[in-house]
Amino acid sequence: MTYVGHATVLLEVDGVRLLTDPLLRPRVLHLRRHETANVDTLGEIDVVLVSHAHWDHLDLPSLRQVVSSGSVVVVPRGVAKHLGRSGAAKVFEIDEGEELALSGLTVTATHADHHGNRLPFGDATPSLGYVVSGSTRTYFAGDTDLFDEMSSLAPLDLALLPVAGWGPRLPAGHLDARRAAEALRLLRPRVAVPIHWGTYSAMTWRQPRPRLDASPPGEFVRHAAELAPDVDAHVLQPGESLELAPA
Image (tube, rainbow, N blue to C red):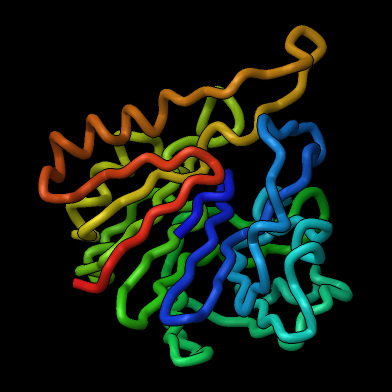
């Protein structure tokens, strides 16, 4: 896996290249990216997984940068209408609990405790997480809070968990560093990587160049050592990679 930034992760599983929630632009609405995303290193993307329709998870210009005529895009039910001409070969809408067989892998849509409406005028659409199963099992949580059914996803090889946001406060429906560490006791992964932290910040007149806040992933590692000591909590900076062998 390679952590691209925010909720964007490149997964390479059994020869299949998957990208989660692509967000690659230097500026998105009122948010500014701290470091430029190197799109050229992503290569050909076979499958894009979109967790929900919020602007920092479904960014159409970023999506069009990474899909090709051979790409498949997977979205929650009701979200496909927001894609327009994405350039993907196929778009699949999926509901919680449904599975897709894609290039020898199984992609399962999971519950996510998060309101995914595309504001300001979009109708209510669900949020999802995804489990990608092949020679390894990876859980991409998208945006979510804790929910009891997380235990049904265990055991996992890799859990990609959000630990922060782009502002100083996290509203309901998100995980902070402590709650993400609590999720590890339900998910029981071998390895956990914190995501959704530090990549973007809101621009203000007083702080035209916001600084990267690297504290959430560090807090996550400390809490994980206390609450789930058997899990290898591994922090990746944007652009860094991790190789995980099958168990």
